Amino acid sequence: MIPPARRRALLRSGLCLCCLPRFSFATDSASLQEVAPGVFVRRGPDAEASAANQNGIANIGFIIGRDAVLVFDAGGSLTDGRWLRAQIRQRTERPIRYVVMSHGHPDHCFGVSAFDADQPVVMGHQRLHAALQTRGPYYRQRLVAVLGEAAVGRLVMPTQEIGPAGAEIDLGERRLRCTAHGAAHTDCDLSLQDLATGLLLPSDLLFVGRVPVLDGSLKGWLRESQAPLATGAAQAVPGHGPAVVPLATALAEQTRYLTRLRDETRSAIAEGSTLESAIAGVARSERSRWSLFDDYHGRNVTQAYKELEWE
Image (cartoon, rainbow, N blue to C red; front, top):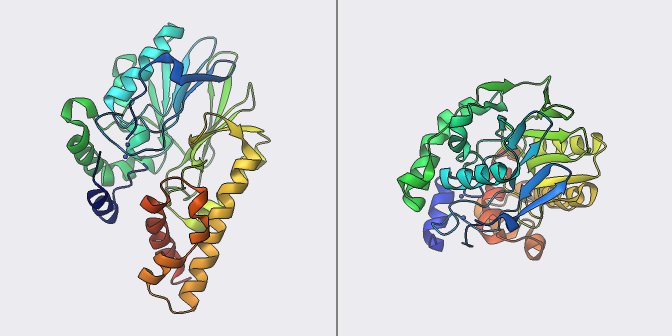
């Protein structure tokens, strides 16, 4: 486990560890749920990166169509990705043709290299390549320090970039809509919707139970929070939290936190509060509602303060 002082130092240096794991790594098939017909999700624990969990902290999974399989977020390490691939092979021999990278945080993207032999199309936001070029080597260095070289895997870049027009993916009698979002959780967020079931897979655009992590734009995230409701989806698979949740309820909880973060940060700035004072006071009423609040809320206030200070 990363000592608290070391964890805070990593956060101050800019490494989004929510986005790095303390609970045991899920290695049995019981940790995988079929949340809709042909849609399988592994819930990640609310934890930080450790050798015990191999950075397997994000909700990851796959969708089986008539002709092919799509992986949505391949896990937080080579070990995590290999576990996911083995789970797919226990259920189908259909080719794994697509791996979707929802954004560039390490718990969602370092498992992609486990699928090298499948030669899938690796899909990502049009800004993901730049994000991974900038931060990827540092993320990998920090993961190697926690997990060891053999467990981490290589950094994989997208081979198909998704722009504002989005894209549709056909798995054979099963189509998925892929949407590229404006800056929100990060500046390179993708979401998926399974058109066969209506299920929405927004990844880290939606946090449930675990405090949201701001690494893009607070105002943008609040704008993009309207997009999931416009899909008509009733159920969603968050990036962190239960494997499937009622969308409107979960989104309302997150929006309350983000709105309070915005409004109280604005008030602190207007009152001339220093950043340190803002961190100590802004949105503290939310503390009991979210796990890992003390680990990430201060960083969120810092990001919000920087964004709102000159508006």
